[in-house]
Image (cartoon, rainbow over all chains, first blue to last red; front, side):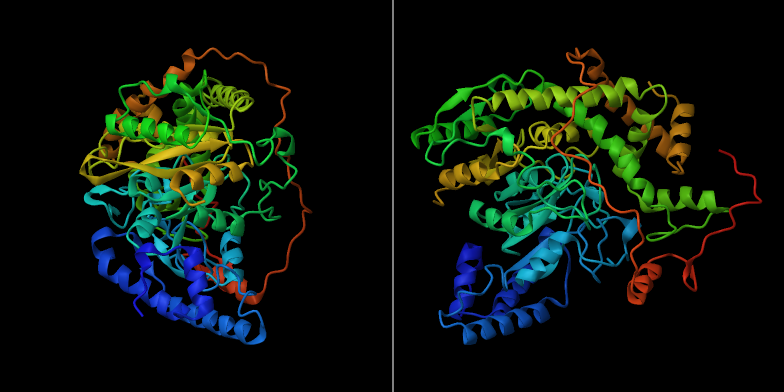
Length: 486
Length: 100
């Protein structure tokens, strides 16, 4: 039978696999065929794995076994058994290349599985391939990939967003049921917004980062991208949890006193920082779609309150100090000695200089140098220490707002997808893309982007919802209600 | 706002070789980025938070070596650009003048 992958979600695919409408091999082949048809234009995938069909075969065997031994007809089969996905190129899958879209790691083979990968493998997920990204996750458009830009499936003259542009485009072009991305300042949510799909950045520490290439260690999180909020919820629950291999992971008790929404029957109250949405930098269509979304939520019975976040306008400044500082430390490991590209100089020290210049792209070098600058003697107090103090002030503002509301709504990005090349010559213009998304990374709070409208020319617009620490449940609840998934 | 000499010093600290063309464009980009983040200097810092602790606590583990399988060792060594037996090979470190 022809599988309708355009309208597929995890639950539907699972039911069909259990019933035997089609096999995991059929499903995997359907996706690989679609990738072959569309990826030449889009460049979402860097590689389609040649072992995907073998994994599908193993999934089919397990489904057959479970069906044979289970009187209830396969109710023991894990929900994700045989479900095809794709993974951002900075997440390690043992034996496969993980290049972070950099020349530095062009032929690097992962020597172990990331924790998120082990968890998905246990459930029988199929890994179709690895997806394109901005080099080492630094960028907002996937234009910084060493392997070519990822184009937006909705309009191929435009970017897919970034840095998880390949992961968002793969879902939007029907090239995978779901994908994994990483989010340091909006890198899951902004491309999800640009491509018209759903993307979640979980609470800092909710998902283990063991086996994921570090960018900004106090900011990074792994999260799912899918077509529905329900699919993102399923994947989040599959990959979350404390991991002794990542000391920053949290447990159930970490945020028990922060007070999630009281009582499941109460309707979450939505807060809007109006004072932050009046700038010239916000596209009219984005603001229009945002206001329409609030009206739609009001009609569904949600209370909408104006809130004040007095220091939110400093978020981007703080981010562009803290992030490069952490980048400069994390990127020190790429020295051409233990792994990655090596270029010979006249001595060991010169090897470093030549290897790093040859292996790293412009934006990565720019951020390493900027981070070195803000951390260097004489500037540390003026930049890094100050940024950390303001970061705490911003977090306090959010905590205070969450005393009266349960969810904070903003647009995900200030504009719909922009033209390829439009912002490459001006780093600050590119950085402004992150204005609404960086706050969730600075505060560590969970945030989701859900499609909420279409701008002229058919470009998707995203609505961002932020909740208290560890309260992803409220994001899923409001998100599903908004998209009519309940 | 940043001089060529300062930029060269940063590049030495970060171990990155810069060409003349790199330097030219980086100085321009640094001016634009620093002009932006310098706004932080105007923010009134309202709190003394030297005694604050976050919800996330430090995680400790035993400082002990874990045995690796021969297969894992082989995999790791094979990723190094240059190996000799079970060692990662690097150039001689001493006996040269190093200018930093």
